[in-house]
Image (cartoon, rainbow, N blue to C red; front, side):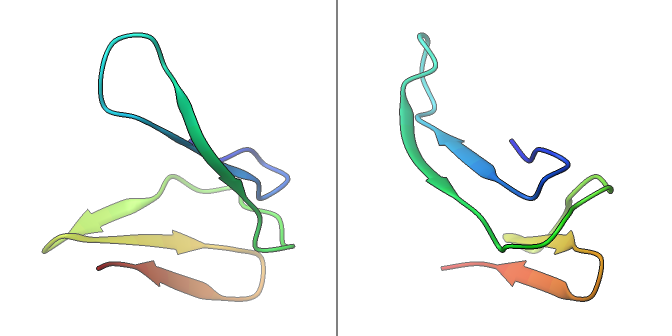
Length: 53
């Protein structure tokens, strides 16, 4: 889950919403992330970030 401040909270995929991590690209994010071919694309105010294995 991304906040508009850029902070991303990672939850475990099960009931209870256990927080696994909190990360921040140090930039604001005002868009919805996009998923394609197992990758997550996030647009910040100055960059496009791809998150994948």
